[in-house]
Image (tube, rainbow, N blue to C red; front, side, top):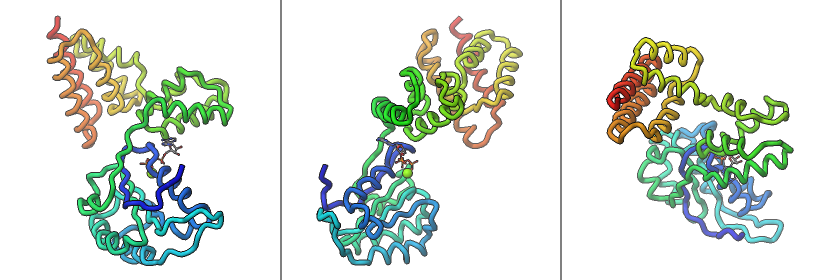
Length: 300
Ligand SMILES: Nc1ncnc2c1ncn2[C@@H]1O[C@H](COP(=O)(O)OP(=O)(O)OP(=O)(O)O)[C@@H](O)[C@H]1O
Ligand SMILES: [Mg+2]
């Protein structure tokens, strides 16, 4: 596949583990070849100092260098350098602003590639100088293909159900899926990975626990509900994880009408926000369960 020798400034954004960093590194390698790569690419990520001073000196100096040299394998090398600013959403606004003029002035010889998770944290003047590419959570097929390739190369025995579960719990983040696969293989020492292992590694709340919580909500006994929630917190399950799973269960529940579902999901959103702001897990779970209980009892 031939890459174009002309390139706009790029802005990649999207959730973690969807291949943003991999894409630009692979494209740069393809464009410049292994030798020229080191001279033509400046890669800075959040682990490097990227304050306004560095942008003014390091980035500016690199951008001002002229491009010379050709590939030893005879393929044409593009007439520009690339500055990769990974995790650009963690750069301060001042440092981002310092890039504005540099990006324009050096456009003859330098392309910028900004990469971030949250595009709203990139200042408007920078986004307007770049072609934007949104990376979506990866589809199940793509992830499955990649995981199968890894399993084949690493000689891991993994059934289709296990791979489907891995993909399910990693929510479109292939890096997460690969990491879980690696952990599971280490943990079982290659003796066949079970669903139990994956669920444990991923911190998924087992469906029995969710069922028991919903059963307690149905029982309309507040004491019972209190014990179930207390047990759950003591077991160490993360409330945010529980909320995500509860959401899926509630949406699919057939014995609730739309009005009840919307009342519960509204509460789920509120609780989620409170937990992010650092609220107490136990109190939030009790408050959520009380709303679910109230909605359940309305049907009967
Ligand atoms: N489309 C894809 N095809 C094959 N492998 C992929 C793909 N996307 C991601 N990967 C795999 O996932 C890993 C993580 O990808 P990468 O580091 O590029 O993610 P990222 O988008 O930069 O994430 P972050 O926002 O967390 O930096 C890669 O090492 C690669 O193995
Ligand atoms: Mg990355």
